[in-house]
Length: 297
Ligand SMILES: [Fe+2]
Image (cartoon, rainbow, N blue to C red; front, side):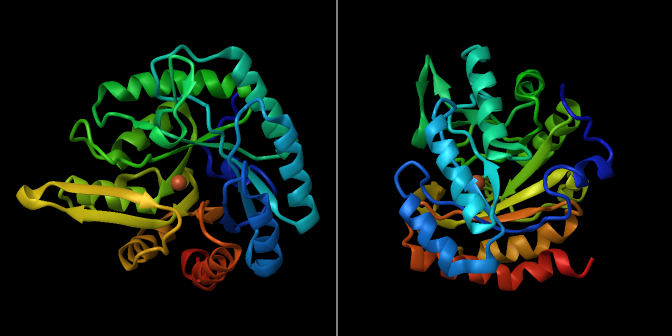
């Protein structure tokens, strides 16, 4: 059954007690050699490793778990086929498999972007369809998250997806807060996605309504490079780029928002496509900034 998360102390007790620090990701399916080299180079600056795999890939889950044990890293599971906002019915067999992978990885929660991940049985991977920014999406997501948490047996942390295109004019953090409070789940703020979406919507990166976000549910944050192009007529194209360095605007957004999250446990350098040298530099840069996000509370 789902853990009741409404009390701050219940959130604090999730996962390895007291552990907080920098996480890194790379392509777990193709680039475990990059992960190995990064773990060695980053040393104690890295605390978590994010495993992005499919529900049925037990072999890779076990390999990633062994990798984390060997390097003293804690694991966070980011499934690639948990269709939390899609239109296909949720697949009970797949949900049970996700629960088994999470147990093998000993991941305290499962991170999932609010998006359609599967369409008519086909995993979309690099072509996610983000949740429409409309009130009706809240009911849809809440029911699916509750069901997924009940079958998986671990909490979900819902992430604001990338928005290369936008449907609806709601605010993502307001919608996420309503979903998280009703589904009793955790939250992940992807600062690159947030910055990109708000640019796309023609809004400031920080809004007054951000004060009302359920910051006590935020356990993860993600940061990566951001790609912004402006065309004639005011049309913008915005997306995140995991193989680019984090932009100054996204660093500033992190510095403004992350100190509001009292239970933040992991800030992830997302880095699919980077070399181990680039990724370990990025992890070290994150670690130097971590005291600002956590230290002085
Ligand atoms: Fe992310």
